[in-house]
View 1 (cartoon, rainbow, N blue to C red):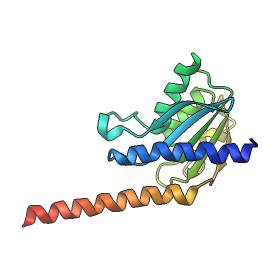
View 2 (view 1 turned 60 degrees about the horizontal axis):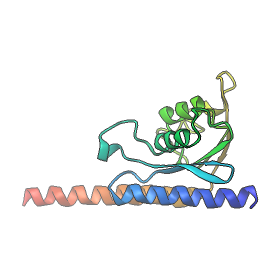
View 3 (view 1 turned 60 degrees about the vertical axis):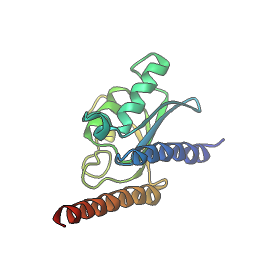
Length: 164
């Protein structure tokens, strides 16, 4: 399988993780870490269900990948994620030495890979990564906007119920 076909396949796997998050009422963001053509870490957002700030999809996938290979260094891996990583997740990517990140949708309010900052490509830092972006961006963006639209609809309905 060539790199483009692999990217498509593994991003689709990350999208499946994002859908798991949506099914439990979490913001639909999913991530997978791949090593030698095999998924070694999976994650989807669980901040609301656990009430823990660090339970982002990327953090969970990185943690599982480290356990899978028995090292904090993920030097020969690729991280696929449905939304541009935030500052915390970009820090974890740098600390775990992930050399390649593929993300779908940009995050204008919290993205630190290209949108607000370019942390993963900053040569002043001890680690940089190759970045690929845009694969399934519209689809992943729609997952997020549909999720938040439904959340707002439910809030309005609940508010109307309490007023009646």
